[in-house]
Amino acid sequence: MFGFLIKKSFWDLWDNMGRVLVVNLLFTFLVLAFLGTSFVAQFSLPLAGLLLFILFFLLIIYLGMAASYIKELNDFKAPEIKSLFKNIKSTWKSSLLGGVVFSAVLFFTVLGMRFYLSLDGILGIMGAIFLFWIFVTVSLASLYYFPVVNRLNSTFMKMMKKSFLIFLDNPFLTIFVFIGIIINLCLSVFTIFLIPGPAGVLIWIDNNLRLLIYKYDYLEENPDARRNIPWRALFLEDNEKIGPRSFRNTLFPWK
Image (cartoon, rainbow, N blue to C red; front, side):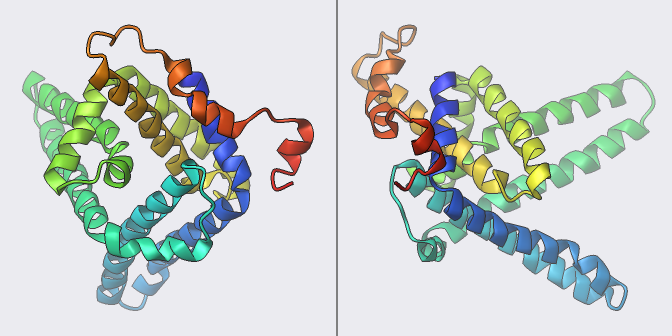
């Protein structure tokens, strides 16, 4: 599972380098606009606050659109860039709801930890630690949210529940995926987050759920085989689609 997740994510990124670059460019533009509100704040704080609010929600909506687009790349399709914007109708509500919930959790975690840390004694420390681990749990479960929206679409509460259940069922894999995100972002610094960037993260987390779905489909038919998942057999079709890669294939994937 771990090795094939790395392999597939790498080739999905490599084979769609141009598309990934465009997705990241648009994301970078929104982030720069978001950071640019500090300049507006020098002239008008209310206007800067309004712009921050608008850009924050635009970023969340864009992430949902991009995640839906990336899902098509991971499914071995070659969608045109313009189809990126066609996904807004089907993703904006779930993206906003997920973004608002996560932002609320972050806000109350920071507020609560400041309160508990201001208290003297063991009670304050225990309260702060408790809130910290709640936030860690929510953050790790949220790694599944966009992939669940795109692959297991349902009502908002059911998608939230599925995200937590998948995390609780695969804690070590989730930690591995989180470490992969950190490595991705560190590498992205050298390319100003253009490659692999946010799109690389979306490829990574979506592929993770895509491969897990194979496991759950198999367990549906073989409920007693949880300790003996035939990963190679489950990934056989995907592995054949990736195919053997020569040096020429790697440098010129379109040929």
